[in-house]
Length: 138
Image (tube, rainbow, N blue to C red; front, side, top):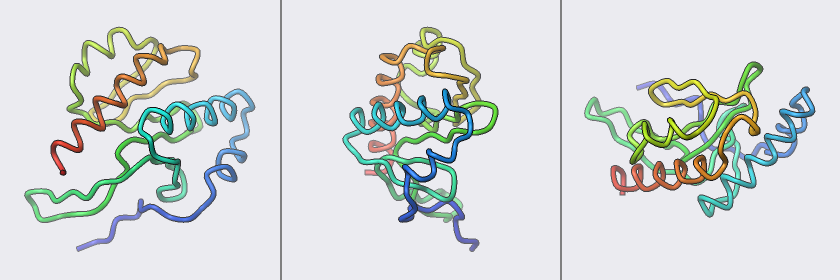
């Protein structure tokens, strides 16, 4: 079975975020580290070359594929931030309606900048996501 490319590593989160070219996005990135760290209780770690993750869990799918993943995380992509939260987090749709300007896919939520969203709603979504993942993968 293929190995996961996105694994926790010892790369520096600060070094990675300091390479973000856009100053406003770089500032938002460091603010997101604070928000995720305080909300999850975990320190930021690099996962692969471009994801900042908080905490971890081990999953095993029905197919037999297994691995480790961050409980929550984000990545400052060129166009927007990708927020990695459980697609099954409690009250997801209700919270997204109050969240602010965003786009969403099954597992990712995309935002352009922190000022576009309600940070308190983000914190609630992080808490609900971590609770959901811990209940699925104790």
